[in-house]
Length: 260
Image (cartoon, rainbow, N blue to C red):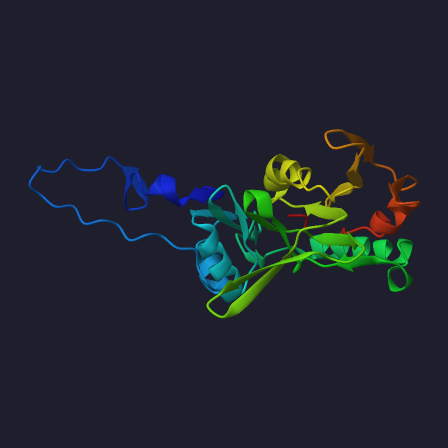
C-alpha cells in the first residue's frame, strides 16, 4: 500500500481486488451513477483503519473548518486539500498514533527550553503547544506546528461554523517543527515555504528526532532568511537575545525507543 493516498487520483481508475484496472467501456445510453464525494474520516479510529501515513482529500475551506471542529485528530489545510498524518511502525505495521514517543519528547524539550529562555511568565512571549492552530488568512491555509511562540498579544482569527467557533493564530513569532517519517516532506517542502510568507514570523526551527541535528531560519528582511545548521551537542541555537543548547535537547539518548 502506498504511503500516501490521493483520493482524487484513485477515483480516476477502477479498483478490483485491491489492484487498479481500466474503467470498463459503456454504451452511450447507459447511465453511470455519480460517485459520492469522498470525505475525511471524523474519528482517529476510522482514520487509522485506512492504514496510510499521509491522507489528502480535496475539500473546501468551509469543509476543513467543519472537520476541525468535529474530528478528534489534527488536520491541516493547504491548496484545496485537507491533510492528515499518522505514524506507522515499518516492521510491525502498528499504528503508533499521530506522533512517536521520541517526537513528543523532543517537542516537550523545545517547549521547556523556549519557556525558560524567553522568561515566559514575566515577558510578553507566549509558548504554545501543537493544539494551537495557525491560519495564513491570505491563502486560506491552516496548520498545527509542534511549538508556536507568539510575541506580544496574540492575534486570533475566528471562524464560526454551525454555532461553534474555530480559532487560529495569525501572528506567530517563532515556529518549531520536529521531523518524522510521515511529516518530513510536508514540513520541508510545503510548510516551510508557507511559514516564510507570514509577516510576523521571525524564526523557524526544524529538528530531527532520530539524530543530533537541527536547522534554523532567521528572517533578515521580507524576502531573505539566514539558515544555520547544528549537529553537535556543544552547539547552541540562537533565539532572540539568547541561545538554546543542543545538549539540553539531545543529550539524553532515545536509544530505548524505535526511531520512526
